[in-house]
Length: 151
Length: 150
Image (cartoon, rainbow over all chains, first blue to last red):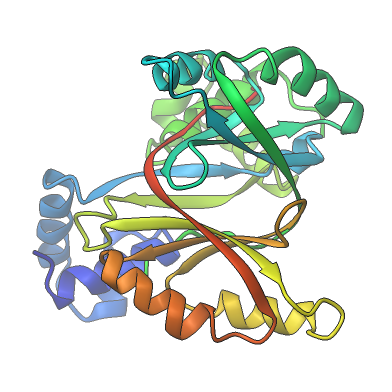
């Protein structure tokens, strides 16, 4: 289990993953050796994983971002697996999530503009297998997106 | 900026793992360390690399439940969207807030320790917010991020 020191280190790293050991030592008053040991253990336990660059797709010309909420035909036993395998082949799909609730799967889809979205939607999304129903939510603005955990 | 194939290769590599050094990355791509660094800097300056996200095992740090909420505002026009966004974004368990067009007005990603904790966050913090109407909750079972069209 995590103790207060672990939580503090994870909070600092979550806010800025580029922080190095000397910087963490300054911020916490702990010795660099102790911090290194803690971080090594958090990594060994697979609590602390790698960090990832966040790509701003709009800056690459992908102005449209759509959340597709999908219900699948559950009378087909392999509907989930076959749908997800096919969805992975669509390059513009940047997230695939499965749910317990009213919807089964959500895809985050990006496109350059509305005609591009329409093309992808018709040619690559509607042709995915076992879709029973599909709803689209178009992102107007991302208000908060840091995804940090309230440690 | 118009990124070339090497820029895309850098983006692919860093979005998979941003912890590698510019030296390691350069070696993989056949670039010198300074050249790699310059390209990363240019991608950052152009806003293509918007930052870094640390991946933690949410379950191992005590957040066993992630729920996506679709929220419809009940009294559109009477509640200020800015106030709503500020208040909802200030709830620590709310990780992301997207203003959307369609069946709902907002999409929220909420973490909680367990379902009982989620119910507490939903009832005490989200449902009590002025303007909140219809709410739909879907519990996240699995999630994968894809590299995208690069």
